[in-house]
Image (cartoon, rainbow, N blue to C red; front, side, top):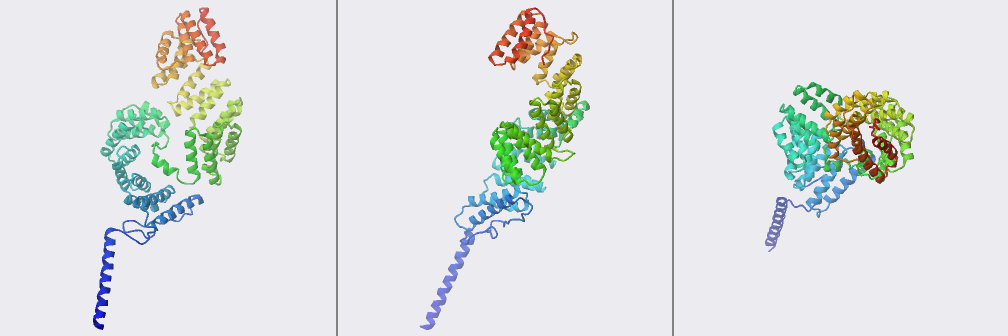
Length: 549
């Protein structure tokens, strides 16, 4: 009996062992795990993740990273977290690591998130940007290809992948992507620029020039496109057209409207992140929110750095837009006081320019001129400052130095309507009417869609004091064409001038009376006296010889 009992006991323990092994095998096979998971010891499908050494980033950013890592570990420590919840926790840790430029630490986070949520666009998309930042173009292209499979009409993904293909010399792969992007977003500067690069690679110089010109028409600030546009014109054998574009080139990225990338940019609790938040608020005309964002950025940005000066200038801008002129003035002065004594400095230039605008608007023209000049010492290619300087010089009776400023502005940006018009008006102030007519005629040919240039030419043709310059019939043709697009009191006055130049004084007087009635209805009382002077001329059968610019 004793032996039988021992045998039974052994058999029972063997059955228990066999059952435990079977359960363990089934658990391994199905992937279930009753033991708590942690970031350091993940399940068999996932990669280990860890927090890197964080001393190079701000304390606020360190805290963000640690909080997200703790949140992930908290979810891994419980068996109730779903794959979707874990994917989000891994991905959000990867995002904050990527935003802080810890690319190696972010990569396994995204790969785990992608494994757990294979249908989610964000994780392969962010991996594409991460690999691009690391210089791994093949892996970046593969990640963007996966993202595009998940959302074939996503324009940012189309653009990033198309650019990668072009950088790899894969023009045939890039072309259908940008063509698809053009069908979805025909006014996208990034898409038009991509089509231009494709055409340039194929030596289709006419097509390249067309695409780059279209892109610059949508966004004249896309200054990096001037270099490839110059290449296209050289390819067409038109060096005269290429030269101005080479002078306008600046190494600036072509912006890609990208909500996912924007989410990453705004993620960190840092001075730069709050600057971006403030800029978004400025774009939305929420001046109060913008000011608060910039103040928060200043709190997080210590020391006299370019970022701190940039935040200070933007805070001044937000305060000015909110109506706090003294507060804005103080901010601009603080930026100027913190600026380097010399050298290129964008924030210093902008602070001097902004303070100059405030001084000019309050009648302190000489002080404004000094600040505009200072802005140009810090940034000689600052077109807005040069235009403001030219306008202030011109309106204070100094057309000759104003002419030089407008000429320089045109050299930097020939597409600037304000620069083209300012140069013509300075010539008119100097009574160089024939030169002004030639300048405006040429500008209208080069920029045919810019109504202010055509209108200025029409008024010069209708009322110039120089008999050799006037051409009433041509002036009337221009005015009638412009009236199809817009009807303003200024344009109505020019039509009356043209009728008077053609000798039709009754119609000139009738149009002038209509213009005066519209001006009264619009509350433009300051213009009525000048309009009355012209009406008396027409009623007395005399033409107008005052341009009233």
